[in-house]
Image (cartoon, rainbow over all chains, first blue to last red; front, side, top):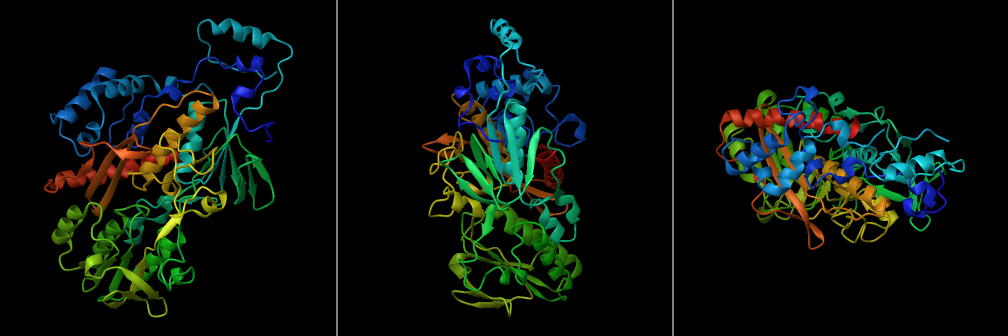
Length: 107
Length: 420
């Protein structure tokens, strides 16, 4: 498909520009959030690595705090949790706690 | 007028309604992102772009009909896994245009890629994810023909089966030699996982055999963990020759399967040469590779520092402290997709935090890992201090079993993310 020019939305006519209102949820995923799903897959997969779906944000924050502090035994999560501050963890947890359909762009 | 669903929010809703009702709205031409390379990075990026922003057009160009994954391919070599478990197709890429073809050239000025068949595809932004290619000009004696006798098996597929079959054909009491390259290279723990699993195969089937690692380095990823496991599981089977003991291979002779080092010469019954390597072919011709053969990029957007409008992710990119791994490739792909979506809407991309976790299998049921958390600092991806690190040296057998199980789970999850 040929574009008129090489640019993005900005050079489209203004009228069309307003058709797109608000940003899709995942475009605003907090730093680090997208990397979690590299290991933590969907609930349906039957994996030993727990899915992060269906958990309240407060639960995820509590688990990460426990990993960071050594109260929860870990194989790798202690090493990963240490890379995120309490605030960063809360932002990720709140994003992960949303249903997947909300986190991804509308079809 | 296409029936378009929009994300409606607040005051903008009324404007959207007016726009929908207007009679003159013509067909939109959404910005197109073209992704070259359908491996872990490219495939993950194409899918992430669609999840982030359905208003982008995404084209994925890949020359092969299937992707054969490298992680766990060492288990195929050792007879523990079928190569079919490593094969992934491109049937599950709804909403993404898949073009099977080979890119001949990139015209960065015209924002266009040219394929081997003469067709062209225009882009608003280009993502190159060409992985690695072995350097056949870096080790005297080691060229493409030599690789058919002394396989690298560092790109999974026919090379994996070639090396596996050579091991199967070797007699008991034979010598396997692995030549490991200097940094940087794809998958830092890879050669040592390979040594471990080949040792497992030899101990089980050909116990009088030996395995020698000739290393161009004086240290390697997860070294203490590997060496402790080797002492425990494969005593006397594996010999590691570091750089300072003359481990660096300076030339090879495929006719005799001889590997020559500074101090010695080794005649192998099976020789696995993991050669120096560089970013996949298209990187150099597109002008995004520097004199090291790898691609310098902005750590927030992964935009090439040499060619604006072209982004490079995965093994081909200079990832700073991030190792060249499938996990890194997938993480970078998602971060790059988020940045692209922002850039194409003229918004400021958010600096990412990235994670890598590399699992290695020392034996069935015995897994070890190295992890890291990264963020942009001083123009590169830097490791966050106090985070990351390796599995404990003194972990119980149950922990090793858990990590081996997690490794399998990770593979299933990451390949779903990348290939559907």
